[in-house]
Length: 102
Image 1 (cartoon, rainbow, N blue to C red):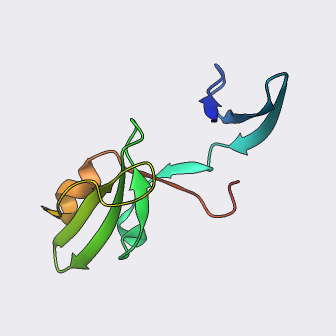
Image 2 (cartoon, rainbow, N blue to C red; image 1 turned 60 degrees about the horizontal axis):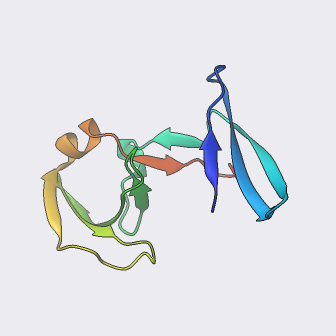
């Protein structure tokens, strides 16, 4: 189990993962570690999450339309495929981990 701890200074956050009941490992992350998804990120197979931690995988990206489905904790399909215009998808808050962030 891990948690993201956001300090009052919003430029950094810490990911805290317990190794055992009495010891915690803290890994420093920069504000670039997790970022909002952009048009250039939209590729088939990409997994991203909303602010609540709900994950999706992109199934299709074509001229103006995007298809995706929600994933469960084991990253298996949870619901049927949904279709949405790309602009509508980008207006929603979906996030990905930046490259080399962890």
